[in-house]
Length: 402
Image 1 (cartoon, rainbow, N blue to C red):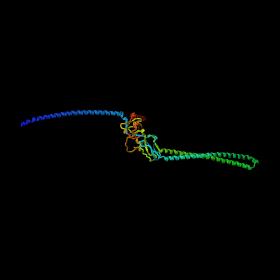
Image 2: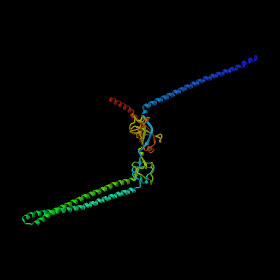
Image 3: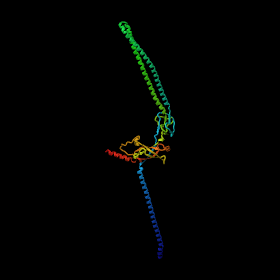
Protein backbone atom coordinates (compact mmCIF):
# COMPACT_ATOMS: atom_id res chain seq x y z
CA UNK A 1 0.00 0.00 0.00
CA UNK A 2 2.78 2.38 0.86
CA UNK A 3 4.58 1.68 -2.35
CA UNK A 4 1.53 2.46 -4.28
CA UNK A 5 0.92 5.57 -2.28
CA UNK A 6 4.50 6.67 -2.87
CA UNK A 7 4.23 5.93 -6.55
CA UNK A 8 1.18 8.16 -6.96
CA UNK A 9 2.79 11.44 -6.18
CA UNK A 10 5.71 10.59 -8.32
CA UNK A 11 3.47 9.95 -11.27
CA UNK A 12 1.16 12.86 -10.53
CA UNK A 13 3.90 15.46 -10.31
CA UNK A 14 4.82 15.41 -13.98
CA UNK A 15 1.15 15.70 -14.87
CA UNK A 16 0.75 18.86 -12.82
CA UNK A 17 3.86 20.34 -14.38
CA UNK A 18 2.53 19.75 -17.87
CA UNK A 19 -0.83 21.26 -16.89
CA UNK A 20 0.90 24.33 -15.58
CA UNK A 21 2.79 24.77 -18.81
CA UNK A 22 -0.43 24.43 -20.84
CA UNK A 23 -2.18 27.02 -18.76
CA UNK A 24 0.70 29.42 -19.24
CA UNK A 25 0.57 28.98 -22.97
CA UNK A 26 -3.18 29.69 -22.97
CA UNK A 27 -2.69 32.80 -20.91
CA UNK A 28 0.04 34.00 -23.25
CA UNK A 29 -2.12 33.35 -26.31
CA UNK A 30 -5.00 35.20 -24.70
CA UNK A 31 -2.77 38.16 -23.97
CA UNK A 32 -1.43 38.16 -27.52
CA UNK A 33 -4.98 37.97 -28.91
CA UNK A 34 -6.06 40.86 -26.78
CA UNK A 35 -3.11 42.92 -28.00
CA UNK A 36 -3.87 42.01 -31.63
CA UNK A 37 -7.56 42.84 -31.31
CA UNK A 38 -6.63 46.13 -29.66
CA UNK A 39 -4.39 47.01 -32.58
CA UNK A 40 -7.11 46.02 -35.07
CA UNK A 41 -9.70 48.13 -33.26
CA UNK A 42 -7.30 51.04 -33.21
CA UNK A 43 -6.65 50.72 -36.92
CA UNK A 44 -10.37 50.39 -37.60
CA UNK A 45 -11.05 53.52 -35.61
CA UNK A 46 -8.35 55.38 -37.53
CA UNK A 47 -9.80 54.18 -40.84
CA UNK A 48 -13.33 55.18 -39.81
CA UNK A 49 -12.11 58.55 -38.62
CA UNK A 50 -10.26 59.06 -41.89
CA UNK A 51 -13.32 58.03 -43.89
CA UNK A 52 -15.49 60.29 -41.78
CA UNK A 53 -13.09 63.16 -42.33
CA UNK A 54 -13.10 62.48 -46.08
CA UNK A 55 -16.90 62.25 -46.17
CA UNK A 56 -17.21 65.38 -44.07
CA UNK A 57 -14.75 67.25 -46.25
CA UNK A 58 -16.45 65.98 -49.40
CA UNK A 59 -19.88 66.88 -48.05
CA UNK A 60 -18.67 70.31 -47.02
CA UNK A 61 -17.08 70.84 -50.41
CA UNK A 62 -20.22 69.69 -52.17
CA UNK A 63 -22.36 71.93 -49.97
CA UNK A 64 -20.11 74.90 -50.66
CA UNK A 65 -20.12 74.18 -54.40
CA UNK A 66 -23.89 73.76 -54.37
CA UNK A 67 -24.45 77.02 -52.55
CA UNK A 68 -22.02 79.00 -54.67
CA UNK A 69 -22.46 77.37 -58.09
CA UNK A 70 -24.44 74.16 -58.29
CA UNK A 71 -27.88 75.47 -57.35
CA UNK A 72 -27.79 77.87 -60.28
CA UNK A 73 -27.65 75.02 -62.82
CA UNK A 74 -31.10 73.76 -63.79
CA UNK A 75 -31.38 70.47 -65.66
CA UNK A 76 -34.08 68.23 -67.06
CA UNK A 77 -34.33 65.04 -69.05
CA UNK A 78 -37.74 66.02 -70.43
CA UNK A 79 -36.15 67.46 -73.56
CA UNK A 80 -36.22 66.44 -77.21
CA UNK A 81 -34.82 67.58 -80.52
CA UNK A 82 -37.45 69.30 -82.64
CA UNK A 83 -37.76 70.86 -86.08
CA UNK A 84 -40.44 72.97 -87.75
CA UNK A 85 -41.36 70.29 -90.25
CA UNK A 86 -43.67 71.10 -93.17
CA UNK A 87 -46.50 68.74 -94.09
CA UNK A 88 -46.89 68.39 -97.85
CA UNK A 89 -50.57 68.33 -98.90
CA UNK A 90 -52.20 69.00 -102.28
CA UNK A 91 -54.34 72.07 -102.96
CA UNK A 92 -56.30 70.23 -105.65
CA UNK A 93 -57.60 66.71 -105.94
CA UNK A 94 -56.83 64.10 -108.57
CA UNK A 95 -54.88 60.99 -109.41
CA UNK A 96 -51.16 60.99 -108.62
CA UNK A 97 -49.25 60.85 -111.89
CA UNK A 98 -45.71 60.72 -110.51
CA UNK A 99 -43.84 60.69 -107.18
CA UNK A 100 -40.59 62.52 -107.81
CA UNK A 101 -38.75 61.86 -104.50
CA UNK A 102 -37.92 58.90 -102.30
CA UNK A 103 -38.18 58.35 -98.59
CA UNK A 104 -35.40 60.12 -96.59
CA UNK A 105 -34.18 61.92 -99.72
CA UNK A 106 -32.63 65.39 -99.27
CA UNK A 107 -34.54 68.10 -101.14
CA UNK A 108 -33.93 71.78 -101.84
CA UNK A 109 -36.43 74.61 -101.58
CA UNK A 110 -38.58 74.77 -104.71
CA UNK A 111 -37.93 71.17 -105.73
CA UNK A 112 -40.88 69.22 -107.20
CA UNK A 113 -42.15 66.37 -105.03
CA UNK A 114 -45.38 65.01 -106.51
CA UNK A 115 -47.27 65.59 -109.77
CA UNK A 116 -51.04 65.15 -110.04
CA UNK A 117 -52.75 64.47 -113.38
CA UNK A 118 -53.19 68.01 -114.80
CA UNK A 119 -55.49 67.31 -117.78
CA UNK A 120 -58.75 68.37 -116.14
CA UNK A 121 -57.24 71.62 -114.86
CA UNK A 122 -55.58 72.34 -118.20
CA UNK A 123 -58.97 71.91 -119.91
CA UNK A 124 -60.54 74.35 -117.46
CA UNK A 125 -57.84 76.89 -118.19
CA UNK A 126 -58.40 76.52 -121.95
CA UNK A 127 -62.16 76.91 -121.46
CA UNK A 128 -61.73 80.19 -119.60
CA UNK A 129 -59.26 81.38 -122.23
CA UNK A 130 -61.92 80.71 -124.86
CA UNK A 131 -64.44 82.73 -122.85
CA UNK A 132 -61.98 85.60 -122.74
CA UNK A 133 -61.53 85.45 -126.50
CA UNK A 134 -65.32 85.44 -127.03
CA UNK A 135 -65.83 88.41 -124.73
CA UNK A 136 -63.09 90.36 -126.44
CA UNK A 137 -64.53 89.53 -129.86
CA UNK A 138 -67.96 90.76 -128.72
CA UNK A 139 -66.39 93.96 -127.49
CA UNK A 140 -64.65 94.47 -130.83
CA UNK A 141 -67.93 93.85 -132.71
CA UNK A 142 -69.75 96.39 -130.58
CA UNK A 143 -66.96 98.90 -131.11
CA UNK A 144 -67.42 98.42 -134.86
CA UNK A 145 -71.13 99.12 -134.42
CA UNK A 146 -70.24 102.24 -132.51
CA UNK A 147 -68.16 103.36 -135.48
CA UNK A 148 -71.09 102.79 -137.81
CA UNK A 149 -73.41 104.57 -135.43
CA UNK A 150 -71.13 107.55 -135.28
CA UNK A 151 -71.54 107.85 -139.06
CA UNK A 152 -75.31 107.70 -138.58
CA UNK A 153 -75.06 110.44 -135.98
CA UNK A 154 -73.08 112.58 -138.36
CA UNK A 155 -75.70 112.01 -141.05
CA UNK A 156 -78.47 112.87 -138.64
CA UNK A 157 -76.71 116.08 -137.70
CA UNK A 158 -76.42 117.02 -141.35
CA UNK A 159 -80.08 116.27 -141.99
CA UNK A 160 -81.01 118.30 -138.94
CA UNK A 161 -79.00 121.23 -140.22
CA UNK A 162 -80.67 120.96 -143.63
CA UNK A 163 -84.10 120.75 -142.06
CA UNK A 164 -83.29 123.72 -139.87
CA UNK A 165 -82.27 125.77 -142.92
CA UNK A 166 -85.42 124.77 -144.82
CA UNK A 167 -87.56 125.63 -141.84
CA UNK A 168 -85.85 129.00 -141.45
CA UNK A 169 -86.36 129.78 -145.17
CA UNK A 170 -90.02 128.80 -145.01
CA UNK A 171 -90.55 130.94 -141.93
CA UNK A 172 -88.93 133.93 -143.60
CA UNK A 173 -91.10 133.45 -146.67
CA UNK A 174 -94.21 133.34 -144.52
CA UNK A 175 -93.20 136.51 -142.74
CA UNK A 176 -92.40 138.23 -146.04
CA UNK A 177 -95.76 137.29 -147.63
CA UNK A 178 -97.81 138.37 -144.63
CA UNK A 179 -97.54 142.20 -145.29
CA UNK A 180 -98.06 141.67 -149.00
CA UNK A 181 -101.24 139.73 -148.36
CA UNK A 182 -102.52 142.52 -146.10
CA UNK A 183 -102.14 145.18 -148.81
CA UNK A 184 -103.50 142.84 -151.49
CA UNK A 185 -100.23 142.36 -153.37
CA UNK A 186 -100.47 138.58 -152.73
CA UNK A 187 -103.51 136.45 -152.30
CA UNK A 188 -104.40 134.61 -149.07
CA UNK A 189 -103.86 131.15 -150.55
CA UNK A 190 -100.17 131.90 -151.21
CA UNK A 191 -99.71 133.20 -147.67
CA UNK A 192 -101.40 130.10 -146.29
CA UNK A 193 -99.15 127.86 -148.39
CA UNK A 194 -96.06 129.73 -147.15
CA UNK A 195 -97.17 129.39 -143.57
CA UNK A 196 -97.86 125.67 -144.10
CA UNK A 197 -94.39 125.19 -145.50
CA UNK A 198 -92.94 126.99 -142.47
CA UNK A 199 -94.88 124.69 -140.11
CA UNK A 200 -93.76 121.58 -142.00
CA UNK A 201 -90.16 122.83 -141.87
CA UNK A 202 -90.39 123.29 -138.09
CA UNK A 203 -91.83 119.81 -137.69
CA UNK A 204 -89.10 118.38 -139.91
CA UNK A 205 -86.53 120.04 -137.67
CA UNK A 206 -88.10 118.36 -134.66
CA UNK A 207 -88.09 115.00 -136.46
CA UNK A 208 -84.43 115.31 -137.41
CA UNK A 209 -83.52 116.41 -133.90
CA UNK A 210 -85.24 113.29 -132.51
CA UNK A 211 -83.39 111.13 -135.05
CA UNK A 212 -80.09 112.66 -133.92
CA UNK A 213 -80.93 112.13 -130.28
CA UNK A 214 -81.79 108.47 -130.90
CA UNK A 215 -78.57 107.96 -132.84
CA UNK A 216 -76.53 109.46 -130.01
CA UNK A 217 -78.34 107.34 -127.42
CA UNK A 218 -77.62 104.30 -129.52
CA UNK A 219 -73.92 105.06 -129.20
CA UNK A 220 -74.28 105.24 -125.41
CA UNK A 221 -76.05 101.86 -125.45
CA UNK A 222 -73.34 100.34 -127.59
CA UNK A 223 -70.66 101.71 -125.28
CA UNK A 224 -72.44 100.02 -122.35
CA UNK A 225 -72.36 96.78 -124.32
CA UNK A 226 -68.60 97.23 -124.77
CA UNK A 227 -68.15 97.68 -121.05
CA UNK A 228 -70.30 94.59 -120.42
CA UNK A 229 -68.19 92.53 -122.82
CA UNK A 230 -65.02 93.83 -121.18
CA UNK A 231 -66.42 92.91 -117.76
CA UNK A 232 -67.18 89.41 -119.03
CA UNK A 233 -63.62 89.23 -120.30
CA UNK A 234 -62.36 90.37 -116.90
CA UNK A 235 -64.43 87.70 -115.14
CA UNK A 236 -63.11 85.04 -117.48
CA UNK A 237 -59.60 86.40 -116.93
CA UNK A 238 -59.96 86.02 -113.17
CA UNK A 239 -61.32 82.49 -113.66
CA UNK A 240 -58.40 81.76 -115.95
CA UNK A 241 -55.94 82.90 -113.27
CA UNK A 242 -57.62 80.63 -110.72
CA UNK A 243 -57.51 77.77 -113.21
CA UNK A 244 -53.83 78.42 -113.89
CA UNK A 245 -53.16 78.41 -110.14
CA UNK A 246 -54.91 75.05 -109.89
CA UNK A 247 -52.96 73.82 -112.90
CA UNK A 248 -49.69 74.89 -111.27
CA UNK A 249 -50.83 73.29 -108.00
CA UNK A 250 -50.89 69.89 -109.68
CA UNK A 251 -47.11 69.93 -109.20
CA UNK A 252 -46.33 69.97 -105.49
CA UNK A 253 -43.05 71.68 -104.57
CA UNK A 254 -41.38 72.08 -101.21
CA UNK A 255 -41.16 75.53 -99.72
CA UNK A 256 -38.12 74.65 -97.58
CA UNK A 257 -35.04 72.51 -97.85
CA UNK A 258 -34.62 69.38 -95.77
CA UNK A 259 -35.23 65.66 -95.95
CA UNK A 260 -38.35 63.77 -96.96
CA UNK A 261 -40.03 61.71 -94.27
CA UNK A 262 -43.31 59.84 -93.79
CA UNK A 263 -43.78 59.46 -97.55
CA UNK A 264 -47.16 57.71 -97.91
CA UNK A 265 -48.16 58.72 -101.46
CA UNK A 266 -48.10 56.26 -104.36
CA UNK A 267 -48.53 56.57 -108.12
CA UNK A 268 -52.15 56.10 -109.14
CA UNK A 269 -53.50 57.07 -105.73
CA UNK A 270 -56.45 59.47 -105.71
CA UNK A 271 -55.79 62.31 -103.30
CA UNK A 272 -58.14 64.93 -101.93
CA UNK A 273 -57.21 68.53 -101.11
CA UNK A 274 -55.45 68.60 -97.74
CA UNK A 275 -54.44 64.93 -97.78
CA UNK A 276 -51.13 64.40 -95.96
CA UNK A 277 -48.69 62.95 -98.48
CA UNK A 278 -45.27 63.41 -96.85
CA UNK A 279 -43.28 65.64 -94.51
CA UNK A 280 -40.19 67.73 -95.21
CA UNK A 281 -37.95 68.08 -92.14
CA UNK A 282 -35.47 71.02 -92.14
CA UNK A 283 -32.51 69.41 -90.38
CA UNK A 284 -30.47 72.62 -90.65
CA UNK A 285 -32.80 74.41 -88.23
CA UNK A 286 -33.06 71.89 -85.43
CA UNK A 287 -33.79 73.21 -81.95
CA UNK A 288 -34.36 71.80 -78.50
CA UNK A 289 -37.72 71.74 -76.80
CA UNK A 290 -37.08 71.37 -73.06
CA UNK A 291 -39.87 71.19 -70.50
CA UNK A 292 -38.68 72.54 -67.16
CA UNK A 293 -40.60 72.42 -63.90
CA UNK A 294 -42.22 75.67 -62.86
CA UNK A 295 -39.87 75.73 -59.86
CA UNK A 296 -36.85 75.87 -62.20
CA UNK A 297 -37.63 78.81 -64.48
CA UNK A 298 -37.42 81.69 -62.00
CA UNK A 299 -33.83 82.54 -63.00
CA UNK A 300 -34.01 81.52 -66.66
CA UNK A 301 -33.42 84.30 -69.17
CA UNK A 302 -33.05 84.47 -72.94
CA UNK A 303 -29.44 83.98 -74.04
CA UNK A 304 -28.27 81.89 -71.08
CA UNK A 305 -25.82 79.11 -72.05
CA UNK A 306 -27.02 75.51 -72.13
CA UNK A 307 -25.16 72.21 -72.12
CA UNK A 308 -26.89 69.49 -74.13
CA UNK A 309 -26.24 65.77 -73.90
CA UNK A 310 -27.74 63.46 -76.52
CA UNK A 311 -28.64 59.92 -75.49
CA UNK A 312 -27.75 58.70 -78.98
CA UNK A 313 -24.25 60.19 -78.75
CA UNK A 314 -22.81 59.22 -75.35
CA UNK A 315 -19.83 61.23 -74.24
CA UNK A 316 -20.66 64.18 -76.50
CA UNK A 317 -21.75 67.48 -74.94
CA UNK A 318 -23.21 70.09 -77.27
CA UNK A 319 -23.70 73.76 -76.61
CA UNK A 320 -26.72 75.99 -77.03
CA UNK A 321 -28.53 78.97 -75.56
CA UNK A 322 -32.08 79.82 -74.55
CA UNK A 323 -34.03 81.33 -77.41
CA UNK A 324 -37.41 81.87 -75.73
CA UNK A 325 -39.79 80.73 -73.01
CA UNK A 326 -43.36 79.72 -73.75
CA UNK A 327 -46.10 82.19 -72.68
CA UNK A 328 -47.84 79.45 -70.73
CA UNK A 329 -47.43 75.95 -69.34
CA UNK A 330 -47.84 72.93 -71.55
CA UNK A 331 -51.18 72.15 -69.93
CA UNK A 332 -52.62 75.49 -71.03
CA UNK A 333 -51.94 74.71 -74.70
CA UNK A 334 -53.23 71.15 -74.58
CA UNK A 335 -56.35 70.09 -76.45
CA UNK A 336 -58.31 69.94 -73.20
CA UNK A 337 -56.84 72.41 -70.68
CA UNK A 338 -57.31 71.33 -67.06
CA UNK A 339 -60.24 72.77 -65.15
CA UNK A 340 -59.14 72.91 -61.52
CA UNK A 341 -62.31 74.55 -60.17
CA UNK A 342 -63.56 71.22 -58.83
CA UNK A 343 -64.18 69.77 -55.41
CA UNK A 344 -61.16 67.48 -55.54
CA UNK A 345 -57.82 69.05 -56.38
CA UNK A 346 -54.33 67.63 -56.42
CA UNK A 347 -51.48 70.03 -56.99
CA UNK A 348 -49.17 68.87 -59.78
CA UNK A 349 -45.95 70.63 -60.65
CA UNK A 350 -46.45 72.15 -64.09
CA UNK A 351 -43.85 72.30 -66.83
CA UNK A 352 -43.00 75.26 -69.04
CA UNK A 353 -41.66 74.66 -72.58
CA UNK A 354 -38.33 76.38 -73.22
CA UNK A 355 -36.94 76.70 -76.74
CA UNK A 356 -33.18 76.30 -76.98
CA UNK A 357 -31.08 77.09 -80.03
CA UNK A 358 -28.59 74.37 -80.86
CA UNK A 359 -25.06 75.72 -81.41
CA UNK A 360 -23.61 72.69 -83.18
CA UNK A 361 -21.42 72.25 -86.22
CA UNK A 362 -22.38 70.47 -89.45
CA UNK A 363 -20.64 67.24 -88.42
CA UNK A 364 -22.77 66.92 -85.29
CA UNK A 365 -25.95 68.05 -87.04
CA UNK A 366 -25.67 65.24 -89.57
CA UNK A 367 -26.10 62.79 -86.70
CA UNK A 368 -29.14 64.50 -85.19
CA UNK A 369 -32.78 63.99 -86.10
CA UNK A 370 -35.98 65.32 -84.49
CA UNK A 371 -37.35 63.30 -81.61
CA UNK A 372 -34.05 62.28 -80.00
CA UNK A 373 -34.01 62.31 -76.21
CA UNK A 374 -31.75 64.85 -74.52
CA UNK A 375 -30.54 65.99 -71.16
CA UNK A 376 -30.08 69.74 -70.89
CA UNK A 377 -28.53 71.89 -68.19
CA UNK A 378 -29.00 75.66 -68.09
CA UNK A 379 -26.45 77.96 -66.45
CA UNK A 380 -28.50 80.66 -64.69
CA UNK A 381 -25.67 82.27 -62.74
CA UNK A 382 -26.02 85.57 -64.59
CA UNK A 383 -29.48 85.92 -63.02
CA UNK A 384 -28.75 84.49 -59.59
CA UNK A 385 -30.01 87.63 -57.83
CA UNK A 386 -33.03 88.11 -60.11
CA UNK A 387 -35.58 86.61 -57.72
CA UNK A 388 -34.16 88.66 -54.85
CA UNK A 389 -34.42 91.88 -56.85
CA UNK A 390 -37.99 91.08 -57.90
CA UNK A 391 -38.94 90.43 -54.30
CA UNK A 392 -37.32 93.66 -53.12
CA UNK A 393 -39.01 95.75 -55.81
CA UNK A 394 -42.35 94.20 -55.02
CA UNK A 395 -41.91 94.92 -51.33
CA UNK A 396 -40.96 98.54 -52.15
CA UNK A 397 -44.02 98.89 -54.35
CA UNK A 398 -46.31 97.53 -51.67
CA UNK A 399 -44.72 99.77 -49.08
CA UNK A 400 -45.20 102.81 -51.35
CA UNK A 401 -48.85 101.83 -51.87
CA UNK A 402 -49.52 101.96 -48.16
